[in-house]
Image (cartoon, rainbow, N blue to C red):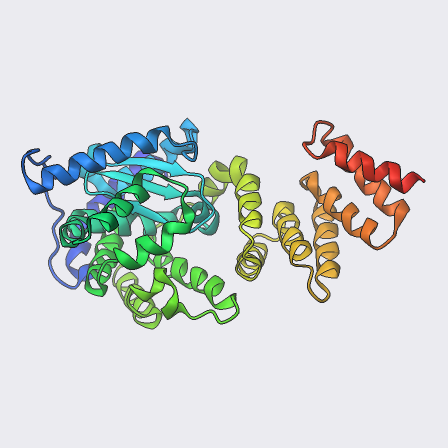
Length: 381
């Protein structure tokens, strides 16, 4: 189905589904007019505008026109008449997050894009955030903030993108209420179905994220800012499944999603490995491997996490993953570096030299090339 036909088919059924999906008649509101600057709301918009200027200049903003336009198009199909007011910014940050300010500025973080399996799952998260925007939840929160210092921190989270350590502050101190989350979920599913997506994909996003949280020692979803302010997972899963069942069907566009994100996947995986949250990363990477067992970069990344954690039998697991990546072909060159580092540690000189040479042959200008060459010189003695 061509993209224009896909959009037309989705919009044709959106109005019919609104009542069934949201549990009550829900009509998409008219475009939000920019408030007068002298009003409280106008002042809030102006501050968000200034934050948006900072975001445009941020070194964390991913400036790839093709990927940006692709994600912007998804947001526009979901937002329909509100498309001209939605401005998407892709942010190079290895955490699951998206948010939308009341002036139409939307952030989509690369950690989220790594974690979704298809276009429909990304649409579920974007649709949820647009739901907050259409219901004006963010404005309600900004009005409720009493502490000026906390308000400043909140605005900074929109503008100073990449301050990942402040995500908990955003989620806990300025979290939406459970009722607002429920409303955004319901609106988001209506928008998904209206754009022709399979709403059954919405629940999978949260199930997958829950796997990561539960993998962490002492992982309790109720203590995680992302889940503590949302309805319980059981409630959310049942609600989303029930809504999806009222109007089954729709597309997930997995092939298009995988093709569009393929050039960035290795960098996003490197960012995830550097995050240093071993158990969460292993849960994520194992799920990705099960879903896509022929992608060598997933095996390489999981091998790196095992090697970094270096617990009991972790180096054996890392070796197995590196070998699996090599066996699939097209492995990242760094696979051979990781393999060589373990072989060197285990005093397997010949194997280590071969792995290091393969790495340098594939990446002659590698940043750590001088270090690897020094290892080769020591191994030759």
